Structure formats: C-alpha cells, structure tokens
Image (tube, rainbow, N blue to C red; front, side):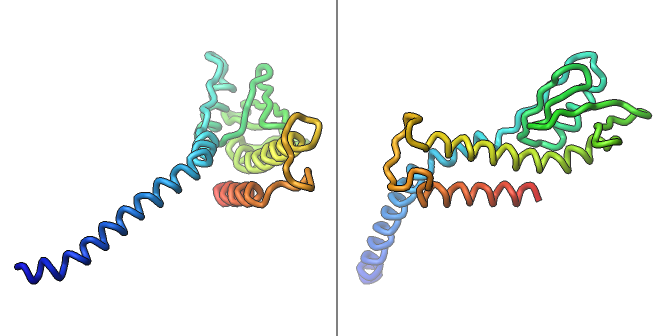
Length: 172
C-alpha cells in the first residue's frame, strides 16, 4: 500500500494543480465574456405580441407573429394597419385566412412573416450598426482612442461579425 501511495501521490498532486488552473481559467473566461453573454441573452429574448381584445385580425396576426418567434418590433397603428419593423403593412381576413397586402396583391400572413421577417431583421441590424458608428464619431461625447475614429476596434468588429454570422445562420 505504501509503495502504491508513494507512486500515485505525485500524479494526484499534479492533477489537483491542473484542476485548480482550469478552474481559474474558467473564472477568467466567465468574467471576460459575461457582458457579451448578457447582450446575447437580451437579443434572444423574444417579446410576444399582445393583441387588442376583440380585434379578430389583430388576434390572428399575433398568433402568427408569436409562432414565428422573431425579434422584430411590431406596432399596431390602427385597425389592420401595422409597422412591421420598418415596413408599414395592411392585414385583412379574406376567405377566413389572414393576408397581408404586398404590392398589387396579397400574401398569406405566415409566408409574409417568413419572407419579410428575415429582411426586416437585417434592416434593423444595419440601423443599429449605423447608430453605433454615429456615436463613435468625434463630437458626440464619446472617447475615440484610435487614430482613425470611423474604424471600429478589431475586437469589437470581430464580435459584431460573429454575432451577424450567428443571426444569419439562425435566419437561414
């Protein structure tokens, strides 16, 4: 027993040291990426659309929107009129089906949300990028430490590209 204990003691001690280093590395990474995780959590939160009680069109539209689980902001302007992201739309019930006015005709609501939802999400992302770039220009009260104020830092642009790629994969 003593001979086995002596042989294994050194290995056990090395393993315990490796474990302690691994725990420290994990804590460091958790601290490093905690803000990013919070941002991703905010983005992942899907706000359910709440329809106006008694409005059949609004209730049907809410059902399709909530089923699609999109993060697009939808606002009811008036009966059957909505702002779907940046697009103003008209919804109607024709032959018991909810349809959305598109061009000179109508499109099934489910197809519309599937097709235009992705486009509107991309538009909203571009608008947020533009807002972020505007805030980084001199004169807007933000600090610019880089020699080129319009160029984002390599780290932030890499994180934004990773985020964009993840959103594109989710949408496809």
